[in-house]
Length: 127
Image 1 (cartoon, rainbow, N blue to C red):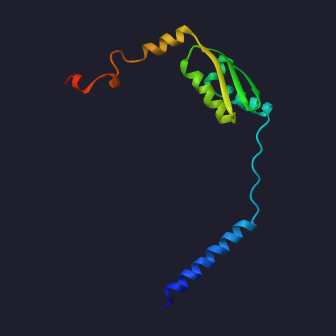
Image 2: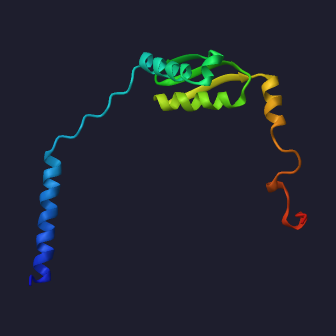
């Protein structure tokens, strides 16, 4: 049977050997940030592959910041455009998409009417 102090010394030695080995191995190079033109192309490709492509948004990228402009009748497409641009690699997104009045009315009509749960006090709960 091996004494505990020898097991501890053996384990410490193994950890040092693993740490030295990890430092000696070359680390993979960091992935280079895409150029503005590459990023703009990637965002346009994401738009083309989605329902947002029907709205023909314009995209400009400068310094990794994507600016999206256009009009839509669907409220969700505005936030979807921001998510797609960030997923493509944009550092920041300036979303200047305008939702039409008809689109806002359609979204509002889908919401339930009456007080929201957070607006109702516990003492007012009807059972």
